[in-house]
Length: 197
Image (tube, rainbow, N blue to C red; front, side, top):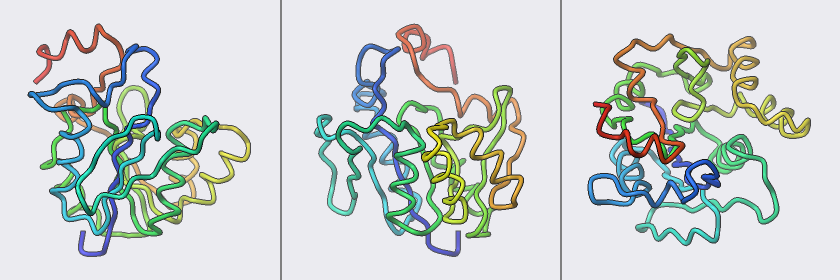
């Protein structure tokens, strides 16, 4: 992107289905959160954030900003992304910690192809928009805040509303791209890591 952008790694999920913290899973001999953060650091973002829970005690390098989930608040990824977007006030590339197959090369390609700082972008698969690997922009904040106030925490609904008003767009993903968005949610997914490219 020629205009400034920020990037955030979402690592604060409760991992209830996994029964262990997904951020701490090992991927190629590193903690998954470190692998994913390294991808974002390679993209040239003006600001890089790590969104997590305070009790995770994830130690980061200088230059990475930590945004903790507020104690006692359970507003999911929508709350975390909204807080980070309000903090940076610029286009915000979001990546979930549990998408280990997402590549920096793919994200870099999308950054070069989407130059409008007032329009977010997302890829759609068989289950709808992939909300946890895409670009959010400040123009989306009114819908995000409204959804939070109504306790409607489904990011799919927010993205659909933003596409409708022109503050975001979606692309249909190809079968090759779909593998990049695969995430790890359960021990069975973890055991099947080697089954994917």
